[in-house]
Each structure stands twice: as structure tokens, then as C-alpha cells.
Image 1: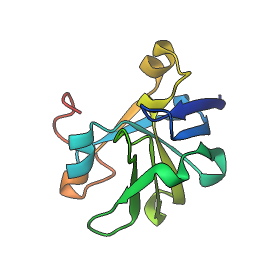
Image 2: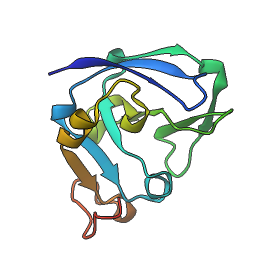
Image 3: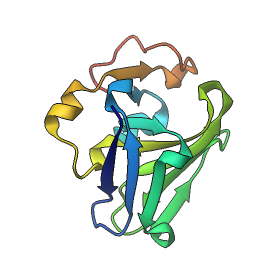
Length: 134
């Protein structure tokens, strides 16, 4: 069931709301940036995401194909969400870092299915051989 969650970066300058159904699944990837950031995301359509504050506090990092905006708070460094447009996954999206949801319960997080993606080998629709460290 979809629920509106509130989220933020560590210092609170970046705040957002997102309508997410955690039962639809979350994702972890072994690509170079997700591995280093220990990213755990829930994908939503842009209309299900509202940035409440902090647009001016966001910094942008892009690499490789530049299909994703890796955004982070320029004050505390936390990546609370990112944006992109990848036709293979349905077009425009926002990836919400579920670890930045302020009002999610441990029970909701532990019940959320996790899909693993092998981004390191550009095999996005298959899990990597090892997922325990993601």
C-alpha cells in the first residue's frame, strides 16, 4: 500500500515527501557508486516525489552516461535521493534513499523486498553472484 513518507538529509536542509509502496520492492546495486555509498533505494515516478526544501543546498555528481543525477547535500554530504531517466526501467524516476526516510519503521524496512542488480557488469536485470555485502 502506498504511503506518504517524509525524508531528509542529515543536517535537515534537504527535506522531501514521497509516496512509496515499500511492498513493491527496493533496490541495491553493486555498481561503483552504489557500492561505495551503500545505496538502498526505492524508485518512484517524479509526480510521487516533492522536494520541500533545499534545492539550493543540493550538489550534483554525474558520471559515465550522465543518465542519473546523483544529488547530495552540500552541507552534510548525504544522498537522500537521485533523479534520472532510463527507458529500460520506465523512463523518468526518482530514487529515494530509504535510509533517509524519517518516519519509516524498522518493521516496514525489514519487510520491504530487496532486488539486487549487477550494475558492475552492466547486467542490471540480474542479481550479482554475491549480495551479502550490499
